[in-house]
Amino acid sequence: MDQTVARTRSVITAPAAAKRPRGRPRKTPDERDDGNRRVELVNAAARLFRRKGFDGTSTRDIAAAAGMHNGSPFYHFKSKGALLYAVMDEGMRSAIARQTAALEAATQSSPDACALLRLLIRNHFDVLLGPGSDFIPVMLYESRSLTTRQRTLLAKLQGDYEALWQPVLKALSKKGRIKGPVKLARLLIFGALNWSVQWFDARKGASLDDLADAAITLFVQAPSSTRQSQP
Image (cartoon, rainbow, N blue to C red; front, side, top):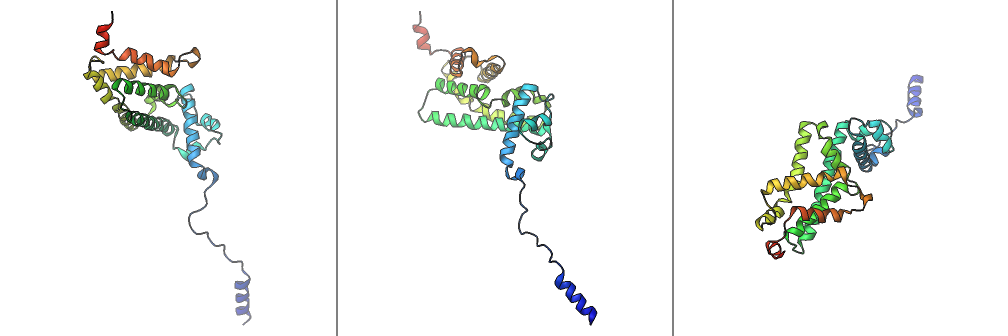
């Protein structure tokens, strides 16, 4: 009898087991801010990869630039190589979106092919040299550090970006305002534009609009009627 009472009392007086909260566990501060932290890491990595190179930049450098602890980048990215790919991938997707939006807005007013090419060139200079433009130099000079699969995926995005130029160049070619094969013209134009990341300095006076105007003058011939009327 006494043993039964003792067992009963022990059950009554024992602290109740803590109930597990239902649903998913609460997120940590880093998890709640995952999207913003990822953006900060990608932007910081792009700046450092451009300035110091991929091999010269450590994850410690990137974490410090993003205001994070040393190991925090690995919560968002598996490796420094994965972060390099993210810089290029997200940069190309942003460039495609900006270019598509610019073209859609322009085509509502039915501009001619020369005006559309100038728009594409001006937008490309903004991608190359404007705010947040670090990813293009990184893409141009650090692709050797990517895996074969990563390079293949980026080549597909680059093809999507350049494909929007093709009909514009074809229209100018039909009018005789671009000489030579359209494919070679496109490659030469991109080669010339992309090289501007090596020499352009906004402090020396030229604006991106100035560059776009000069590029159009170099790449596109004046209409035949205009050429014939010139002395």
